[in-house]
Length: 264
Image (cartoon, rainbow, N blue to C red; front, side, top):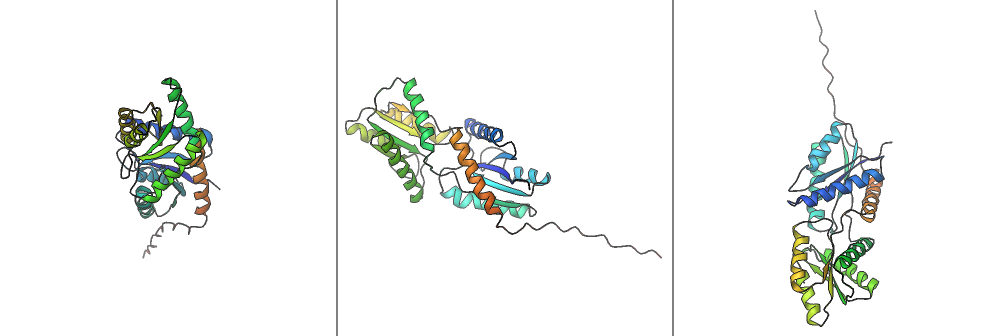
């Protein structure tokens, strides 16, 4: 039995570094699971669309597809955009069995990646002392999604025995710069900001520039491609693949038989 194809569905960005990171992750995944068909697609800003990718797979005879939202937050895009993509894909390609996996989520293992990125930044900046942390993410109007970031920030602080604040670039407060300023007003002069973003882009750049202007001594690079992120992708894929077994079989297209022509 052939394993379902894996279609990575990223948000997309006008910043080419973002798409490059997604394609690098797909390359890493292909090297890890040579048995799987793995493709990248994007919701917006850059090609290919999920429909282009799924259409290509359907034309090649693929029968099952897992669409994996490459998102950390289970908020608007995960709740609205991704189900809409899956519904539309099922409508366009009725012969395919298609399911969406869960988002990556704010998994604890991401802290391992965050720590590596932060250590590299501290080394490059010759920063030897920290007395507070800020965990910066995109932010959401969904309070549950933001609460997940706050939980992860608390775990990060416990790891390093440092006070930490969760900060949000959009739709919630405090912003990364506000969080840095708050710590500095309390007398903590060595504040580092962890970038809880999957790839470079407009929001991570904004978090970095405003945090540095507010006095942050270090801002880590984004999570990027890592073994931990790849494992999370494959874990979500595996669960969704099992869920595919419970779906009704996709209807096969009906091929009309030609009428027999009687000759006199």
